[in-house]
Length: 392
Image 1 (cartoon, rainbow, N blue to C red):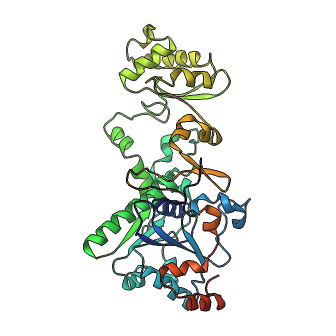
Image 2: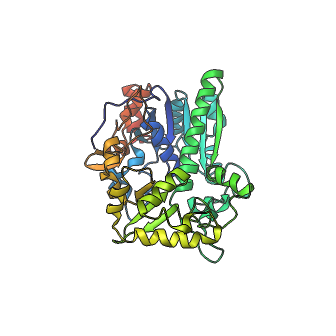
Image 3: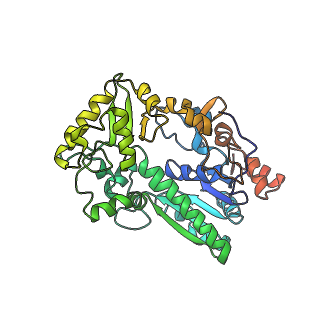
């Protein structure tokens, strides 16, 4: 793990104004900044609240990975000069990101109409939970609410009497931040081709429904008829699930295709067992029991070593800390260390450009009025805005 501050990335030359928020919007912004977009993050005076009530914002510092690779400016958007400063930045940007409830930006005088008037080529990306319209649009919510309504959370419910397992942040980050970033980039490509900007409405409830499109197709075709844990690739089959080992550790098994299944059963010493000779659904519980009994004979790491060089599709279930040290992660530099803290590396990888951490999380989280210089503000203008308390 090492720092990579000389990186540029494929989005070099794309300029984005981000209005500070929590969760999916800053995650999507991080992804874009990681790939080289030049970004300025407009924060509120005093800073945005911490995403965890046990920590204050300043205490996060070098741990605020989601702020990395862009400059922050605290600006009073409720003042006329603050709004004018924001609109001037927007006028030089390719895109804008905001994650407030519908109507908030309009009340600030920074909705799509004035921003697109200032910059007709602007891509105005709006990141919300419920979307810009509909009966729930003006109400509060969080990841769990959005994936609940979209149908995604129900995929984790073993039966109507039991609560589903909660997959943390799948909706926020996958159905939200990434969804928004994808839409923003599509808008930028279109704007560069046509000279005309657009408004991107990225709702987590929509994006999380899109995430399970493959499962939805199986369900509609009658191939996903059961509750969670009873279907082909959610734990209902012996060749796709999680098994406990002798030491209490876990391994994940994903040997879906027959060739991989053969490697799995051969390695486990079960290839000649007649219960695996057919695909009779009535025998599936017994198959799972026999596979589980074999995995229980060795430790997690012993099984990981046994399957490491095979196509048996078995991998250890690691903790977040363990994942940093796994040989595969080390070989790919999947985690980088900045200011003594390991964090997921920017991605995906590009053969022609180098991505990395150009601006460390702690540095990125601090307000820097001098960031305005890169956006065309003169030194005396920056000093005047600072002296007036418009920026800090």
